[in-house]
Image 1 (cartoon, helix red, strand yellow):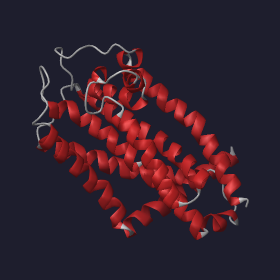
Image 2 (cartoon, helix red, strand yellow; image 1 turned 120 degrees about the vertical axis):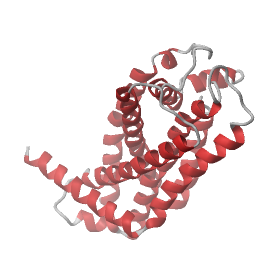
Image 3 (tube, one colour; image 1 turned 180 degrees about the vertical axis):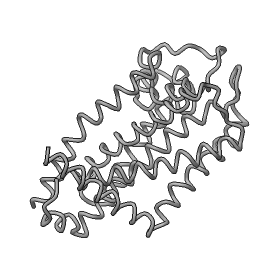
Length: 267
């Protein structure tokens, strides 16, 4: 019990440290705020005028996909910050302190969750200004935003694991971009995955990003009876499968990232 209490207290301390770092480096928060605005405006006004959907506007269909795209790309901040701390020797200072090994990673992922809250709130406001609406109940809408944040937190542990394995910011940025682009663009974030050709269709249908996007669309009410019913099992049960994906990512990558962190600070 004392060990758990110490780990929680250390995690809160590191979270506060990283939150202060964000406040002192507004360029990080600026990117988190400005990039979603660009995403919403660009895709709504450039692609929205070129694509039509039966029974609903493309803008409403698109916004849940933009939400997911933003949290996947912003999760890279976790990994980039960790690689910078490794290069600067900050982890070596933490090693000399009587603190839980998981506290650094917990604090980093929680502070990035704060930035994701800011990012999603910004996109929601901009989306409302350009015509996006939530047609579900308040409970369903709250569950939709909660699912986005839970997945964002879980995916931060994925990028933390990749960062601790690679250890340099430049290599991490390249690998993270290679990871995030297929996840987002081989999904239903922008178009119906059933329209994708050949082998790309099952990849998109079983992509966790597709499942999360479909769950967000259902909970926000951004669907139409005129749209075809998804054929793949994950998309037909999008909400529980999205929660399952989040749990699987946490179960796999939290201990893996913690092990890699212990190895990194022991060198």
